[in-house]
Length: 582
Image 1 (tube, one colour):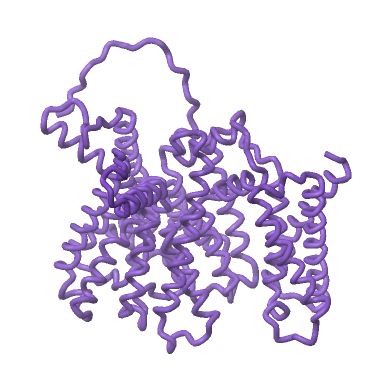
Image 2 (cartoon, one colour):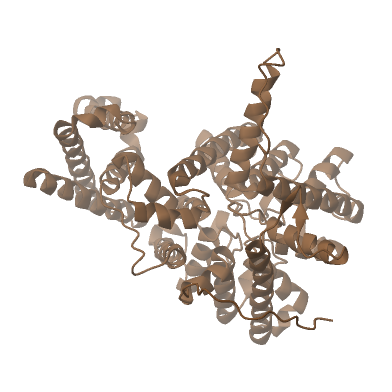
């Protein structure tokens, strides 16, 4: 590579990187006229260098024209040139134009420039210094810390926020929990809410998912070491499937969130929200929050808010969105493959043309779907019966069914509440405990011990009761390592939750054991439901809940793997002994 071109690319990257800080300074602080003019001028310097670097890249390497990245670059260049045209040639004559009155469009050009230049860097997930578990955990801790600083910017809140509360909110957003110490809708400005939304999206999918895939997309390849590391983080079955897995994650997320946002938009009552921008932001916020199972809402009482609790279409859309997010990306992809297979066979009228594929729906998908449907169905029936004349009394029969379904699905890490949580019957709260603890499915945006873990534990009990030495299901035997991981996950979850309950009880004994236990289960399983004590917790208790949320999101098993060095496998085995259990 020509030295001058390398210098140009490096300059474009660092200018775009500084441009992000200019964007934060621009919206995070109140600006004087002179400061605003300097920032605006710097934005155009950034996108100018970005254009030059893009043209130079294609001039240097003509093969880029045959890659998919060319489409992104063409759109970015056209968009940037349009911005220049509007500012330089249209100017004051069209002062009412959306592009001219809203600087966010210029900032978007800066962000696109940063993404393009960053993706050209060599992303090296070095396994020499950090193992995949350590990289995964460090990425979360870094985003949490940065998010807490962003939330402390003057323009992010109306009256300022303490570091502990900012750290709590950032952790809750990144860990897609939904527990809040301050009201999201009234305490934070639109800029602050946008930061929370960004943290939810990054936390739900993982910063490494975006960084790694964009790097691969723009450069057309990746190192074997990066693929090996990412395969362990994404649970890809083959190293070669890593980037197709990342692509599926990003594409599914974009399609579901966009579809949900559009549907939510059309369910909103015009009398409650008159402005298009207000309705659009509400729709996008709740769509992303639902799919990522975050549970954050700009409504003070979540979906239970007056004017929204009887909006049954909105609640059905939210249910579908957070259930899809909680199923897990591999399961969704597998369901799509099954649907595609059935669809193709349906239109093949000749039986000879029809194809037969055994196990289109793999063992993971079968176990997860059956466990999810069973838990949801049982919880729905119990919620409907227990709350029929209690929290569901004000609704019609259809409304009762919708709210019962909402109440059955939301504890499994979604975190939205459509009823008054403090008015729930005691048996309902106990059922909610169990649902929160089990949580969502593996490789999803949700938390908990996971449905597969609960299923393996249940199947193990049944196998022992039948006198079997192996766990067998669907003519398959569950691997011993899966059984070991399942019971390690269960044991560690109870240790972490139990420790959290003891510590919070020590610092805030007046909160009551039931409330504290509910808070701890909700934090560990990244649910976000609460019986109303989160905001009044002491600083020490808030820090404990923060720790529980982080451990629950990255999993205690990952933390232990990150701490302990793996031993080399030895070619020997000791004599086995049975230990007395009961």
